[in-house]
Each structure stands twice: as structure tokens, then as C-alpha cells.
Image (tube, rainbow, N blue to C red; front, side):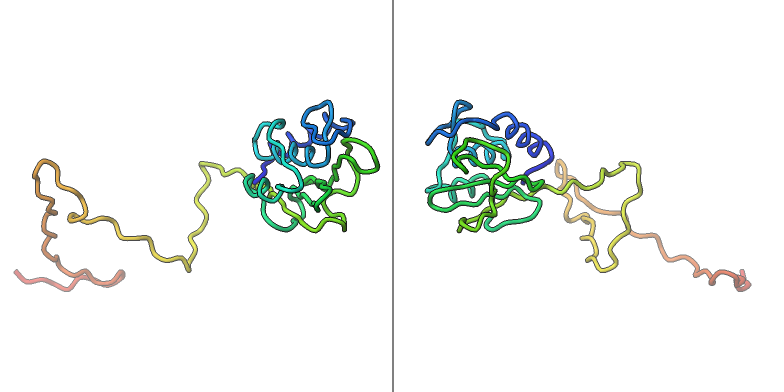
Amino acid sequence: MIDAIATTAILTLVNQVSGTPYRTGGDSPSGTDCSGLASWVANAATGRPIYGDRFHTGNEEQALLARGFQYGTQPGALNIGWNSGHTAVTLPDGTPVSSGEGGGGVRIGGGGAFQPQFTRHMYLPVAQDGPAQDPMAPPPPADPFAPPPPPLPGPADIPAVDGAVNELPPPPPPGPELPPPGQELPPTTI
């Protein structure tokens, strides 16, 4: 999953490499092609080194699976689309990013992952940042349909130490039964 920090890293990367010239098989700021750009974005999103771990359209599926991507598309996720000759990216905020479209290099814009020419799609889900939990706040109410918790361990479940026997003292003998609240105790005779 991609989190807010990785999303920021991707946006920073895309802004830094925008304008990088198109270079077939390139894997550096001096030039890259469409799959190089998709590799850089996927690497940044998953905490891998940006350069030196690129894929191409022929092995893109395996490379994306190895990075935690899932099949299909999802709004608000990092989406990558491809076919046998081209690939492009749509960032979680919906921004399309491409390289080689229109004869140019890396640019923010283009068709993105949702182009009709792409027959394959994968996405990296975005981690949902829930509200921060206040450690002093009371716990949420119990689910009335949740199964009861397991019983606490008894003496037989607790290992003996140095040959000691695990025994609990016998329960106290039953005492006199008390009447319900609001009623008086019956008189006793001695």
C-alpha cells in the first residue's frame, strides 16, 4: 500500500523529472522512456531505489506484482496501464504522467493509465489514514454480536515453578442468602 509519505515522494519525483528527455531504455535523469518512468514511480511508491530497478512492458506485470500492485484500477490509487508497446501512470490524485507521448519526454499530463489503448492495468492501493487515537479516550463500545473473549487460564494451564503444585485455595463455604434490595432480613434464632 502507498501511504501519504510515499505519495509526497512520488509528487516530488514527478516534478523533479518532468522535462527529462525521451531515451529508449534510459534509467537516469538524462533520459528515460515510458516504462522507465513507470518504474521510477512504482519504485518511489514502494520504497525502492528510484533508478537501477526498472522494468519494461514485457515484464511489467511481474514487476508490479513484486511491488505489491493488484490487478485492475481503483480511483484514488496509483494506477498503471500498459500494452505491449507503451505504459503510463495516473497518480493517486488523478494526475496523469507519461513519457514519450506526443514525441516528448517525461511530462505531467498525457493520457495516463486509463488510455483506451491499454489492455492491462494494475494499481497500488493507498493506505487509509484514520483519525489519530487519543490514548486517554475511552475504548469504543463493545460489539454486542462479537463472540465472548476466551476464558482466563486456570491453575492447570499455568506451569508449575520448581516442582510447586498449582492449586487454588478451596472456595469459602456458602454464607447466608441475602434478600433482594428493599426487603428486610428474617429474624434469626440463636
